[in-house]
Length: 166
Length: 101
Image (cartoon, rainbow over all chains, first blue to last red; front, side, top):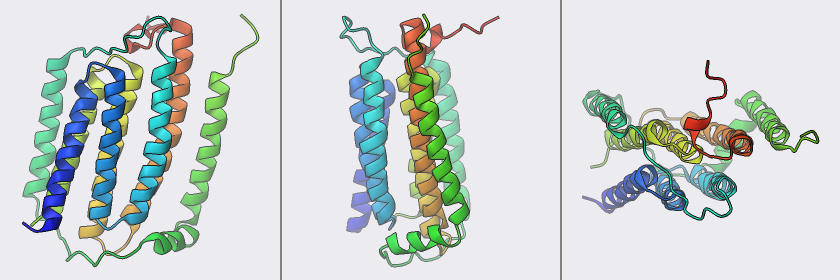
């Protein structure tokens, strides 16, 4: 049990317990803050897997952007006089059966397959390599992602705008 | 020794928890949180395969694109949820049945 293994198990515990709190918590704010810990755990996994740029991008975009957006959504979709941000869980048993079945199938596949794994490389800074790949081999998906972001920006603003009539 | 299958099992657990959130939650923002869990589990898979299987960074690049798409999707989905809330005065997805026949 090396130190890397201990870190892996700790991160796995943090991530999965936080994800369970996200799914089962009664209050929306508890879910949102447990989601914060889940994102931190996933960023820790990226660091363990040698993806340092991705870990920083995950923290910036997910925690700094998406989680804040979700909190805005929580705040804006409850009545002002109703401070009780509760959310109910419906049809728990069929959902549990489906989710448990999918987990069993996925985990069994993951454990029993003979993956053709190579020896993991030494962790190296990836930012420069990712930058070269974005500007070289993956230039077209990069530009397409920029257009996607522009479209999403315009679309979200258009959907929420207040209409002058009624 | 922690290998590829450990990461895959962790991401499978995240995926099934996210799916449970999407299936059983009534509030729209909670459903969005479940979708984010699913996307994160797919990202862990991509980066794990990039490290253990392939010798290149394609998995990490794909994961960056997934993060970008997740950000765009959350923005648009929240715009829809806000408009729905303005219309129906409730964030519960069960009440969004205007198109029901």
